[in-house]
Image (cartoon, rainbow, N blue to C red; front, side):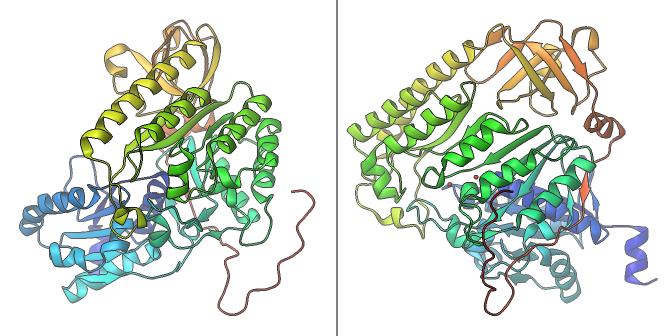
Length: 499
């Protein structure tokens, strides 16, 4: 029997383990799509997979320890299962390269952020040669969205509009691992959006390391606002989100597009990082606190109901007590609905790792605890303002860890807030992907409850797909990426149509 015939009768199974940001989650959907196109089958929850793929992140200090710890746990498993393979990809693979195989010689494949599409070939080659394959490219081989994808959600989908970043933030290692910004053409983005909607998806999130600098490659600084408006013309698309924008690239036309395009959600995730101008300068964040708060004021003038979330780093090198107090001042003025907060950790290869004035961990922890207390006071007050208000919830899966115990379902309101709601007489009829209107009855710092009878329930194609067990699968969407040689002259900008 040939190898291919044996593979057809007993397809190899796979499992992807993902760490890090939304971009990594989306890349893992591409990895799954690639493997299934190559004949692999996703392993069941209780099965031992033939191939385990780690899609890694390098942003946090403990990323290395986490990866090597998990690889160590798999070593005895692999020794008992001849033919099992382990692959490591993502940002940590791009950074550590051959070091991974040196420290964990039982790893079969290491691939980087620029060559996700090589994974099936590298697995075959490693199996044939009985030796590890390490392939790390320095520039993008294929834009990830040209690759097939096995989508994880029937109702919400990621759509990458750019990869890479042209900024030089001193704490961030991403530009050196993801490369300079590469933008997709608007028509390619919209083709993928329409393909997802045709599969029943109701909500898309436009992704980019710096989503609102979109258009820099083809010379249109208003391209992102135009793209938001164009998404508003896609029939069947009910919610549009985007992440993450950079304050330095935030323009008034994007605020207008958000306010004037009905399916663009009034939610904005915009990283602050610090409220101190001195720290922002040291971070090479090319905006200051007043500029940041000015954007928020404009957003709320145009959309009073907007929910604004952020990222904040505590304890950046050189941060003084006065700098930290300024961060608390900005947090109080901005009144965020939630925030991702981080204690600064050194990342080798970043300028900040060698800066003087590294803040003692005990001081960082004390400031961090104060920041969390301040934020929770604000987010709780902001959530209490919604008591008694009607909210539209997209029912989801995996959002409510206590749902089984409480008898509630969970989902996201249009502004992105997490809502746990009672199904009442509709128990058993509401599926993930369906739309429910309900009234907020309780507010906590990080979620809302709606314990009354739902006011309305709309069955959707996304709910039908969930009920049928169908995951959206999208083929690769071709792109207008630059080719080898001199680039063509940019076309004149049309007059009319994301860290």
